[in-house]
Image (cartoon, rainbow, N blue to C red; front, side, top):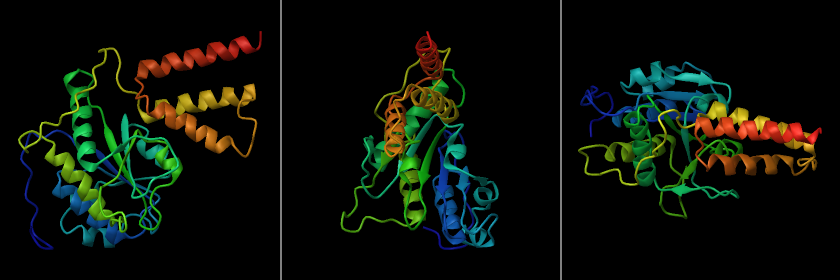
Length: 269
């Protein structure tokens, strides 16, 4: 491995596009820069930041990136996690601790292969570019449960349970490396199969799912289902989490919204 300041080696051409890396409320510019360096090590180039504590751009991030200027310079900043993932069809969340939520748990190796298969399935099926992303939480507390509720699966590295915390760049490299390893010619076949769907549709992106959730919650409020104020946040999160795991297509989202509209129309008759 090269030391700090080593020149960037161009990646071989023809590799598939990689997942978007989303850092949620990162604290230190130096950590963002080191995460960017880890990304480029693994041929990942699209970095999104949600409310970086010390603002952006960051001279500290540029210095710590050690030459990964294309990643740092191309980073985009968002006001919320939901905005940062709205155009993505599949999102994975990294965490070092179990949560009181029902979710699929993947190892980094399983996640790397699944991301490869998911994105490749979209291209081979004629749906155009299908995007996936991976969320990483802030250095102190990690991701919030509301962030995890936006995701399709959780990624947990099988490390020492008595000391499971990774720094930001380590975590990014861990996922990026497994995605890289799952690619053609890297000793892995990607296993796990691909998502087959009709040519007329594609996986729903997070913005479409968000509109479905808001539509459903509006009608559940109107019907009185969410009437207990203290329980509403947990109930809403559980409903969203359940629907996220269904991996809905854009057509299925439109169908569900039609069902909701039809049922709400009946209520007034």
